[in-house]
Image: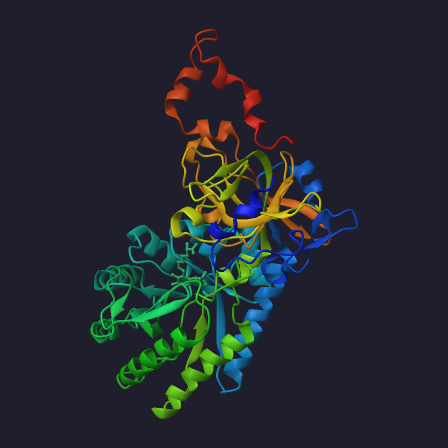
Length: 492
Ligand code: LLP
């Protein structure tokens, strides 16, 4: 296929044509990713071909060592940055990025606390063995049952998001004779838009209190004996590069912190998460140590100006902990060069998953990269678009990538940097079962979340359950054929 000779004009400006389309760009892969002598990509020392054989495709692969090392490194970076100012820091892993009981175990063993935002995430986090005192609970609409459960287990902190929530929580703690530590979520007015940030006086969004409204919330909490206000919370967005947005926000929030400190103790300041990772070779995220110093130093400067001590700082990275540890393996199916009106050509490469296992390209126009994992190739790079199997033209896995022009059905395609917000955002669109999640450690692979089967999907269909009780012969044969149940995970 000579797709590439005409494709340059349709390539996005940031995508460079690689001299070698087999090369692994270090920043987007787990550190353990390497090609063996036979050209096969190995993750955590295990060849992708073996992973396919054992677990089928699509497959979410999570490098446990990478998650653990990144969790440790991130926590160390913030603690060291705070210690330089005589302060302390605590890192909460934002579970929404990828939550399972195993991941909870890894991050808590590495000393991190966990941030949850629903009763479901709370249940998984507890099931993973996290200490209730090491959990923070977010959300703009926590239900009464969720609040009750959080107080019941003795959760470390609840991040208050509205005046109504203050009264709801106060009633619960009063009835239970409990005391609950809380933070107040504030919009600093700085909202990061991926690679840039906007600052507005009144941010038009659902989370937290405006800077103007926060003092009234704080005053109300201080009137209530069952609620112990420990600090302010602020999160400016996600996939943010550089420190400018965080520093701008820190300046504003420290000013409010200093002001509210006059009315009582305020020992903690939580600055949220949002630290960006590399999805493609064009992304250059700031190393976490530099980011931590930049943010913490900015807070310390602001505190010094106001003559107040640096509070205990808290952070909530999600993507930055798990993103790079994840690789999704797909099998290539159909391939077609599509001639464009402009005279350019684009190679459409279809894989056996898609927007159901990673909706981020469809939801946010997110970019990823990809490599053939089952072999290397000497063929010229061709501009490709990797698409899924869903009945939707926006079902894009990798919008633009140079892949060897001889890519063929049966090749394994690996998409790196899928550890965050892939599995948690997955769906059963078009009744595609969710892939399993396999964790790699010490040269071994094990399933930490099993894949779904067609039976799983039919299990909640009450009409199916009713028909299954109909005497044999009248029941729908296809649905009762158990051979469909393992279709997803059988190696092809
Ligand atoms: N803390 C709070 C209060 C948050 O709302 C979030 C993310 C985080 C921490 C963690 O942010 P991270 O460090 O992972 O960027 N689904 C989107 C991202 C949504 C983030 C929601 N909140 C995506 O796939 O890009």
